Length: 381
Image (cartoon, rainbow, N blue to C red; front, side, top):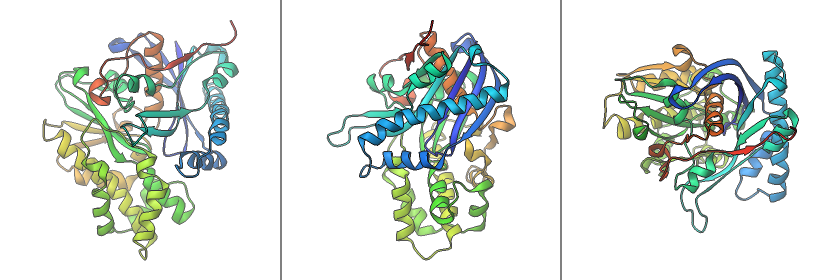
C-alpha cells in the first residue's frame, strides 16, 4: 500500500515528506521509497513556532491557531509531493504525521508532569485528502512511562540491522540522536537517546549573525576557529551529565541559549561562534559514544543521516573525533539522508494500522511495548 510520512523537526528548515510503497509489517516490512520532497518552512510560520515554544512569550490563542495553520501547511507539502510523484490523492492509503513539537517535558519539571505537545491538526489532512491519518505518536509511550522519544529507532531496527554488527545510526536534525543496533538483532536491547543539539544551535547562530537559516555545507564553520572557553561551558551543560535513556529539545538548546552565549562571549569573529556550535555537535556525539556505547561494546560503523549529513565541516569534525571508526552518510549506504525521519514515521504509521507496537522500551524507558499514534479515519466513506 501507498503511505506518506511527514516530518517537521526542531530545526524548522522545512517539512519533509516521503511517498513509500510499504508491504507487511514488523520484521517482515518491505519498503520502497517512491518520492521525497522538502517543502520550505514559510518565515511567518517559523517565527510563530519559535514564539509558541517560548516559555515567556507563548500564548494559548497562538498555539490554538497554529495547530490548524500547520495542518494547512502540511496539506500544501503533501500536494507538492504528489505532484512531484505524479500520483493522485485517491491512490494514498494513509498519511503518518509526526507534527511540530511545541514543547517536550521528558521528566518531572517542578509542578509539571512528564508530557509532550505536537501540533499540526490531522483532521485537516484527513479531510483534504480523504484518507486515514496517523498522528500524535509520542503520547502513548509517555503514558507507558517512557519519554516519548526517540521514536525513530524502531524503523532503524527494521531497515538497518545486520547480524553480527554493532551499528550506530546518528541522526542530525535540529537535535542529534543515536540508535545502537546490536549484533544479535535483539529489539529489546536496542539503545537510543538524544546526543544533544544537531543543527539547532548552528542554524540559530546563522540566523542571528547572518540572517540565514543554516550554514550551507558548513562554509561559515570552516572559516572560523573554536572558542575554547565557550566550548568548555557547552560541554558542561547539565544535559551532558544525564544518563540514557534521555531526550532534549529547543527548551535546552534553542534561541535563548544561543543568544545568551553569543552575548557572554562577545568580541569574536562571527564564524568563530558557528565553528564552536558545530564542533560542540561533533564533540557531544563523540562524548556520548565513548561514555555510553564504546565503553560497553565494539562499534563496527557509524551511519549519519538528517540534514547535518550535508554539512561538510561537521562531518569532517565527527570523523576526526571518531577516527578509529568507519563513518558513512546514509546516502553512501543507499538511503536518503534527508528522507530518514519522514520514512521513519511512514513505518510507524504502518505499524499502527496493523495494531503492532513500534516503541523501543530500551530507548524511551517505557514499561511496555505499546501501539503508538492516534488514528483519524478518512471522513467520507
